[in-house]
Image (cartoon, rainbow, N blue to C red):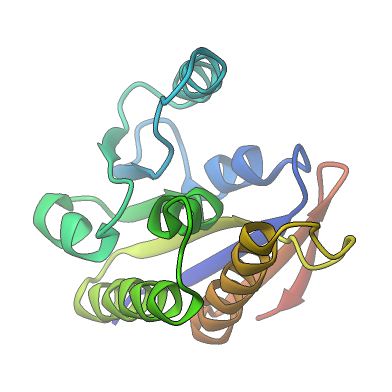
Amino acid sequence: MAEKCTFILGGARSGKSRFAQELAGEPGSKVLFVATGEALDEEMKARIDQHKKARPQAWQTLEAPTNIGQRIEKDVSDAEVVVIDCLTLLVSNLLGAEPDYVEAEERLTGEITELIACMDKLDASFIIVSNEVGMGLVPETKLGRIYRDLLGKANQLIAHYANEVYFMAADIPMKIKGY
């Protein structure tokens, strides 16, 4: 079973990624950073480049937009800590343009089940980052509502599994579960 699982939630630009990197340890630590984002346009490419520059160069990076549990098991190597940044983009990657809710929920549940099974098999500690999107207005579009609901479900599943859960606001971590 995962040595420890820490889940970090918060809004956009709340300091989640920075806090996750801080928790992951010293720059020389054996860390596998799992990036779920894809550079599908220039703006996203610039964001990804900015995130890469903020990480210690010694960390191994795994780009895995989906199937992260399987990919981590295959590429974990000697990592002591696995940082997954982030569930927000993972859910987006699973959705597609016009999803059927039932099929999308099945894909998501399978993905999270595989991730939890992966964490149960490995001795590494895990730090998982996600956005909290359930505190705002109800999205105007069907796709927006499906996305919000599925990310909320993914967040719930990981929060139940995690030993510790933090909520970030204005770069301040607030522990809401754990020791």
